[in-house]
Image (cartoon, rainbow, N blue to C red; front, side, top):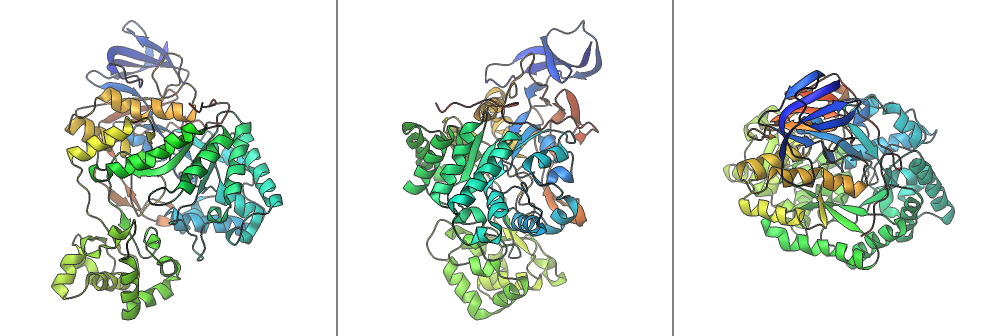
Amino acid sequence: MFDTIINGGDIVDGTGTPRYRADLGLQGGRIAAIGDLSAAEAANTVDATGKAVCPGFIDVHTHLDAQVFWDTTLSPSPLHGVTSVIGGNCGFTIAPLTDDPADGEYLMQMLARVEGMPLESLQTGVPWNWRSTAEYFDAFDGTLSINTAFKVGHSALRRVVMGPECVKREATPEELAQMQDLLRAGLEAGALGFSSSYARTHNDPFGNMVPSRYASREELVELARVCSEFEGTSLELIPCVGPFDDAATNLMTDMSVAAQTQLNWNVMTVMAGNLDECYGKLEASDYAKANGGKVVALTIPMAFSVRLSMAGGFVLDALPDWEGAMLAPPAEKMALLSDQAERDRLDELAQQPGPLKGLADWSTKIIFDTFAPENQQYRNRTVGQIAEDEGKKPFDALCDIVVADELKTSFGTPPPVSSDEDWKARMEIWRDGRAVIGASDAGAHLDLFMTANYATSMLGQCMRKRGLISMEEAVHLMTDVQAQLYGLKERGQLQEGWHGDVVVIDEARVGAKPLTVVADLPAGAPRLYGEADGIDHVFCNGEEIVRDGQFTDARPGKHLRSGTDTERVGLS
């Protein structure tokens, strides 16, 4: 007798091969049978007639490290068919810790700054009662709806070993050895690898770069080398913002060679207009392959709007010489944005040539959310329209609104509309082999953007509405490819004996619903949120976690550990 039989669906098994009609039986957390099960009995049955039965999607780049403690569903990712997530990216983890509360407090404030997690939520929603990475994993293992895996973050290692010195200098040989030992302990506990960041957008709230940005090249390579001692580990890195130089390409290659495993870098956003630039970055993969390594790009499979804020200043601090202003305390920042001379100076700096110059095209920015009563009139209008109506320069008009809102105004680019050419360009990159879908940042940037809905966005826009890609290929690109990249055992395909991570999808309806703002974080903090259409049933390890777009009470998620749940990934 089966626990569940999914009857009459089209099996889209994740391999990319043509679908076929069959029943699927789940038992003991596994796919027990695929075939004609009309004569079999089951405790539960699901009618999948006219629908696709697929492997659960695997999201390889999340920041759900803190959310595991306040949201056992890890919403909204499972509503979009995600059954496995990998966190601990960009060097930003919350383990290990020390007995000094200042270390945990620093990591909290750093996460709030660089990953857009409300500080009050981190303070009230996370226990901060572990020390080792092993204790952190044990604190939530067995409590979640979906499977999780986490890397060990570079900035956390530096803070634990070097204390406040981590944002002042390079590590000594003795300190590097201590970091290697801590990383080794994390990998022994099952961490999936090592992550770091050199991105200029990553700064702490105290006027410093994040700790990993102070590391020497040798430190990064030698920490990566520890991964070579462990089965089924890998690397993740943000090498820079903008086009790669030789130093970035060489660093990624040397880290991969030292670790004897793949390195994936974050993030590539693809449109028809920047396809040549994307192919230029993919040349880093060719260089790595020629020199004995493996480097892969992570790409988000959709365009999305970004909601900026002067309060947090994230992304804005990457404008030329804006770091000091965006890292200033709120009162000082208010004074700067109220002063005409300072406004003129900041605007002039922002208009300098550079990869983010378009960010400072203030007239095109839309005002999304306002807070002062007198600012309600500006919602959903462009700064250019407001400036013209009021006879102001665009940056002055924006600053007046921001100051009245005490910095909390959210503004950004209009919601993008991707053309067929944009989707075709993305498909070129997905099929290239040097790039993988997976850069959702789920759990982070909660007021900036929400791309945990990438799977249903891609299926709804590229597959259902445009017919540019088959369901079989789309599912393969979001399941089996990721499982192979990370060496996940018996996941990413629908095969007898494999884990029961299964999604039933109505292809006629699948898509992402519009984003909303919900105040459901600890301490009542808000976040951007989005649900899905057409994701009718989601099973994780054989248990139904989503039914008709709503979470069930089941929490069958497993914490995936390197070596046990992963195997070594080759460099070919």
